[in-house]
Structure formats: structure tokens, C-alpha cells
Length: 352
Image 1 (tube, helix red, strand yellow):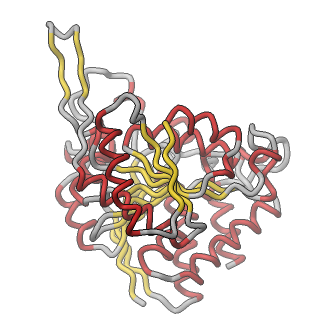
Image 2 (tube, rainbow, N blue to C red):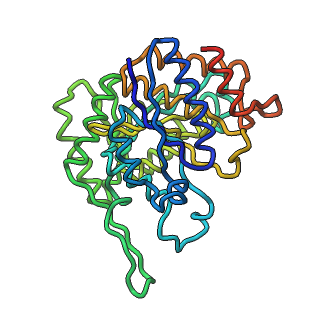
């Protein structure tokens, strides 16, 4: 199979972890007789520096024409520390999601047997956890009307959802539940928010289309608590943009490191795959960043975008072997030998 993949390395450690994922993908392509055509494009602070736009039109065209997008990370301290900056790297991320129609962010959360004691949560609470969040990604408070009034002393952000936006995300959730254990939880704040009441009534109206799926409805604060108490009581969770942003970061600690968790952002026509961690600017150029989240995002890409399940599983197997063998970066080494980012990539390739 010929695979056309847009490559958006981004900022900070993005290029370093992306390089390892490319090495792994190329090794998998060789092993399974595929051809990968990589097309690199700028985004984030790197794109601002080059052309003044965090998501240039040229990058968008490359992404649209690709079969899938593999993405690193964006962000730079000089923008974080300047509240008056008119153009920010994160604007490129929101623009990319909206223009590509990437409305469903899929974030799995699972444990690694060899790392289960590295989680801040007790083994008995997290053992066996294997859940997935579907977060609505192109609407809600991040895209609603916002502004300042009263000479800048009053600020507002508006959370708006349409029934169609809720329906398309919920449909993905029901379909995911059908392919797993047929359990779905809708996370909202329907006791307070009108937008959440729209979410709840929309999902309730869809239940009859999926009679095999057991659906529950929970308030976001209750889910935030239960995620650290009994995370393995959940399987598939669907929620709106802001709630999903917060809860998925909370859930990432279950695995023991944000450097291990992959994600996908799906639309009707386009799909993008990325690690959940940020650009980690303090580590830029030091060859110490954990590349495994990006490598596992590439596994999601093979499976989700191309239907290549054997290839995806081969990546997951070799990643687990590396963890079992202690071939890890400094965030997981804990006093033992820490391997460089590039050394991890080379080890994975050698063992594929």
C-alpha cells in the first residue's frame, strides 16, 4: 500500500520525537511492503517565525491532500510569557482542527504492566484500566464568542453547541462502544449548563439506535473524582471540548507518564495523530524526550487511517518490549540507565 502522510513536527521536542516515529514507520513499511510518502510542513511557532502564520495555507493544503497527518507538538515560552502577543502557536492548532474538520479527539488511557507502579495511583485502583475518551474538538467555549467589556475589566467566553455537533461526536462514541465492551458514559454538567442539557437530551434520543449499548450520564465533577478512584469502571466516555481537555490530561497520569499516551483527531475526511504531551521547550535539542507517545500515535494512524491492524500491533508489541527491557528515557529511568530519544528510536527499529 502507498501511504501519503503529512508530517508536522512543530516546536520544542516535536521534531525530535517525530523523527523517531518516522524511523519506526519506515521500518514497519519495509517489513510489510508499504511505501510511505512523507511531506513536511510548518506549524506553530516555527511557522510564525517563517511566515507569520501558525497554520499557513500551504500547510493546510498539504494536510488536505494527505491520507493522514502525523503531528508533534506546538508552543514556545516567548508566546506563553507575552499576554499581549497577537499571534500564538496555539491559534494554529485551533485553526487546523477547525479547517480540517477534526471534530472528534480520541484519547485512549491504558496501563503498561512493567510501569504500573510508576503511576501516582495505587496498583489496585488502576490495574486493568483501558478506557477511551472522545472529546468534541471544534466547538464549545474554545470557539464561542469572547471579548472584553467595561474598559477591559469584564471578560466573557461563550459556550455554544448545536444538536448536529453533539450528534456527530456521540455517533462516534456509540460506534466505538459497539466495537469495545458496549458501555458509554456521557459526561456533562446538565444540572447547571444549558449546553450540557442539549448534550444529554441528544444522546438520550440516540440510545434507541444502539440498543446493545449501556449508556450512563455523569456530571463532570463526579467523573473527575472517579477517574482517580476507580478508572477501570469506565470504558468509552464522550464529552464537550473544555471538559474533555481537562479530564483527558487528568487521566494521563494513570499510565505513569504523559510521554506514553497517544491520541487521534478525526473528521469526516481528514485524520491527525499526535502525542498528548506539549512541546516541552526545556528539553529541546537535548535528545532526552520520551518518543513513545508519538510512536504509539503512529500505531493509531496505521490502524485508524489505513486499517492496517497487524502493523499497528507490531508497533505496540515492540514498544512494550522496550519498556519491559528498561529501554526508556530519563522520565522513566528512576536511577537506572536513561537512553536518549534517538537511541529509543534506533532500538525500536532494530527490534522491528
